[in-house]
Length: 258
Image (tube, rainbow, N blue to C red; front, side, top):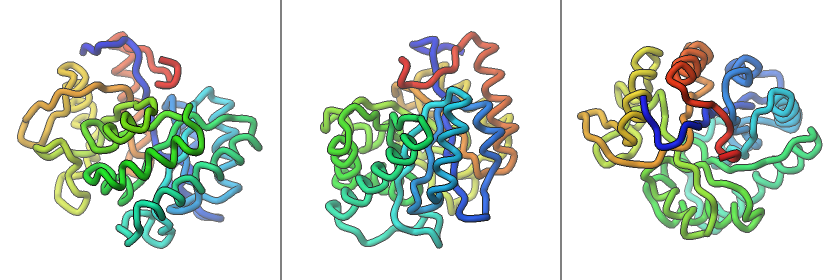
């Protein structure tokens, strides 16, 4: 396996519970990942979960980001909502502010922003929504990094806004030939087999490209690899992936340290 840099970030979406309900094993994932994207209350998360997750991340030396979404608790942020770009911009700014406040309360610091679910999928394809995401991020803090889906409108919007952009690939999601993520509702879109996911990551890092479902290669920078914390065997997959990456000589660290 080769990569332009010997450093790589491994991230996961965490803090995705609400009240007494929890999703995934955040404690275990924080022992594996180098960056955590924490739900800000719109698709999941609440002040207690956010503060606890930020505090644990600090203890583990894990960088933290605001995982922003449509205001859709019932649908886990996976339903598209009829919001204008200006409404999206303000909703994103609101969530970043909440994350910053609770991170400060926990003694940690938000360093990046990542979109979740339907918001991320729309911003992957639609420049107006991607620009709203980037503008909100810059308005709150121009030093924040936009963790953006590789080869998407998000990366271009971040660059237009003058933000630092980190290019993200997914270990456990399939890509179609235009470089977009295969919709979750389609068979094979979410990869649950650890061996298959790890093989795909190795191939993408070796070639510096997205690998699509038909085998097409689409060149891209790669700064971070995401393993979703809500998929079956997520912790096992993340542990195996980290072990294999380190065995190949890559140093796992937050992309903000690059």
